[in-house]
Length: 394
Ligand SMILES: Cc1cc2nc3c(=O)[nH]c(=O)nc-3n(C[C@H](O)[C@H](O)[C@H](O)COP(=O)(O)OP(=O)(O)OC[C@H]3O[C@@H](n4cnc5c(N)ncnc54)[C@H](O)[C@@H]3O)c2cc1C
Image (tube, rainbow, N blue to C red; front, side, top):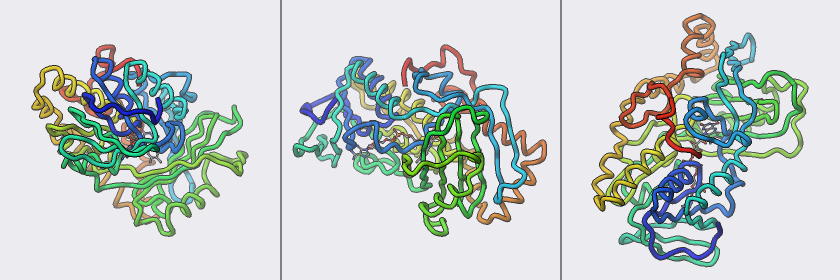
């Protein structure tokens, strides 16, 4: 794994070594294909862009290494603006675990290399001409010919543009600080604050799993009254659940765009396809993208495997975002609703509903329900079981 020599031709070039690219590349190499995975970052353990909350369904279906997961979280506290009279919801099951993302990415990269993937870090994909892709690294630029290109290059995908596929236009922007907390201070808890003056169109959060605290805000970039950074500072000064926890002077900072317009319609063509954030595979409501990126990668790898084995690029026609997108209708409607919460007064009124049994049942369905990203041909509420395990490793 290095910025070393890039081959002249491969079966598949995967651009972007986030979870989507790593998983797609590993599955394809495991089926015997020649795969080159490139990422512009010089290392995979820095510049992390996610809180890393994995939901129960993902942990049921994918073998994420447990040694890189924090303690299970069952308790969620929903706070109105001003933080008075929060609504507390506790599940009878382990609902969330926060990944220790640096070692998780390192483990996923090691699994990719074991499967036969060649990884070139510090290598930026810079465009495509007549079937060959331009890669720029520390030692200059080179061209690689690939039968298929996979765009796993995040919310603002260059590959999507070059392949003439759909691109994300509906984005939130999020930022958080991460720091260690003293152990044993109370049950692991996920606090969500619905306050459009702090997080316009989404939420502010504190996730404290008893090892680390993640303190963050996300929302529509143009609606933050004094910018994202200032909103995070304001939230950090009064964030719930951190009484008695001192924020250290040095914290890890994470952040990035989050596509919430739902899965894009055109995510594949004869020359390649998109996975993960590049494909808009993020829940429009919760903004969770880790489960969708793993599930869509399984589908992408199956379609590419078929196309490579049969030599029929029309196999990629089965990779149809428009068909999968129909299963997002409900979540897109709820996203629209959340986007309309524009003042603290409206958010406070919404809490009156949340305090009713019906409101709490609805919140439980969103937070603790069994829904996940739809797998093609599988009803979205199909029970997870051994046959639903798409892969051995994330
Ligand atoms: C602040 C924040 C918190 C979040 N928290 C959660 C959470 O707790 N749970 C959850 O489920 N989801 C969360 N999400 C969403 C989730 O993190 C993403 O949906 C998921 O990580 C997407 O993975 P990916 O592999 O598609 O993209 P990424 O992880 O963004 O990977 C894309 C990769 O492509 C590389 N790249 C881009 N362009 C090029 C290029 N031209 N050449 C080479 N390489 C390139 C980048 O360097 C990057 O490594 C969060 C998002 C944000 C921003």
